[in-house]
Picture 1 (spheres, one colour):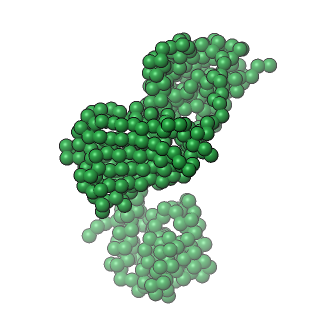
Picture 2: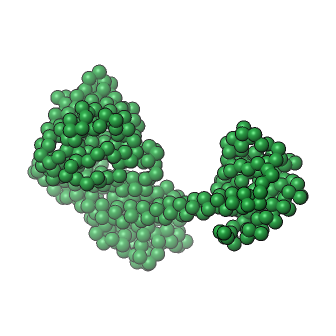
Picture 3: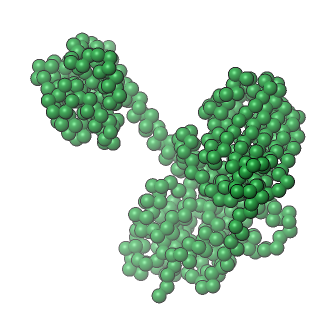
Amino acid sequence: MMTAHPEELILNVDDSDAARYAKTRVLQHAGFRVIEASSGSEALERTSREKPDLVLLDTKLPDVNGFDVCRQLKQNPITAMVLVLQTSASYIGKPDKIRALDSGADNYLFEPIEPEELVANVRALLRLGRVERELRDMDRRKDEFLAILAHELRNPLGPIRNAVELLRKLDPSPSPSQENARQMILRQTDHMVRLVDDLLDVSRISQGKITLRRAPVELSTVLRTAVETSQPNIVSRHHQLDVQLPESEVWLDGDSVRLAQVIGNLLNNAAKFTPPGGRVTLSATCSGGEALIRVQDNGIGIDPEHVSSIFDLFSQAGHAPDRVQDGLGIGLSLVRTLVQLHGGSVTAHSGGIGMGSTFEVRLPATESCALAPSPAKPETAPGTEPYRILVVDDSIDAAEIVGALLEHSGHAVHLAHDGASAIAAALQVRPDLVFLDIGLPDMSGGEVAARMREMPALRDVALVALTGYGQHKDRENAMAAGFNHHLTKPVSLDTLNETVHRFVTRP
């Protein structure tokens, strides 16, 4: 016989002294700790205060009926995870059980209940509760891991992007091939940053809850980015890729990175499910205010039975004969989610196994297929007034490249690589603004900010968190520590300059 965990606590709620006593004795004999309540209001109060693992709840109570007690317990964030085993000698019909379960009860038993049945049900629910707590703990640890991973990945991305920006400033008239290479690095760095952001919202991706950063975007630019991203997979499989771009400009209101991700996923899918030496075609047209993007291949095709479910999460329909089954089956599900968020649709067609596949994405274009957006704003000119700026980062590369960009804008820059040095440098330099990393080797950036705010000489300095920690709680913690602003790595030179001029004030 399984024994109860000694730390597990049960609240036994019944207005009948005799019935309550009998159930308590049965549960105590089985090894459980038991506390009691004789009314609905007392049950709510004791559950909130003592946090039992399970509430054994009678439906017929003198003040609040058990159905409402259960509903209130489940709606209260403090008690929502407490298990509820509802019992009744009065409400014994099937509709009563349905009512109880709809109220949030985890199970419902009709009285009289045999002692063995009561103990078995309590043990079963507590086992499920333990598993649920373990899963929540695993989910919490996953979020912590992803936050750390995102921070570590952002750290090298910052210097890469900022180094390219500095090269553009140092050599404003590069050759076309050099400028193409720089633009490629910037595009792929931005793409990587967005993928890192996705690590922090894995659950939101699976639920289709992704925030788009909309702006006017030209379709051919999106397609070229997608081709660039998927090119290594296509080349490694020795496929021939034909790209047919629209004859005129096609403008969309969308998220350029997400749209490139959609087409890139479809191209990678085509490459993966086409035997080596195959043919992949990417084409786009525009008609009637709608852009049509088509990705075709002469690969393994799709079984007609699977066409309707090919976009379902974790769906995997076959694989090329030279490849083992790979991937998690989330790519096409993500494609559908992103396309629908843009107000479009995606469909799949295939003549059957061995007949290749065609994926069509339809997206609403702006008023006219050739409508151009407003002219881009000219690049922000370097500030005319130099400021004293302290850059604090334990990554020497990251600190130096940010410092070089700010110096190019005419500012006097000083560097520090740990918290103690940052405070000492700030007291000596008296900076107008401090760009301060959060993850420092000796103390957190939040501690550095709090200490600076306690010093009269530094109380009014502008503090900006420049960090790889970019979750909502990280921003809240930064503001609570005394920061004026929070930036997530990597940042552009324009963003650095805008931040300086926004937060630096001089009498």
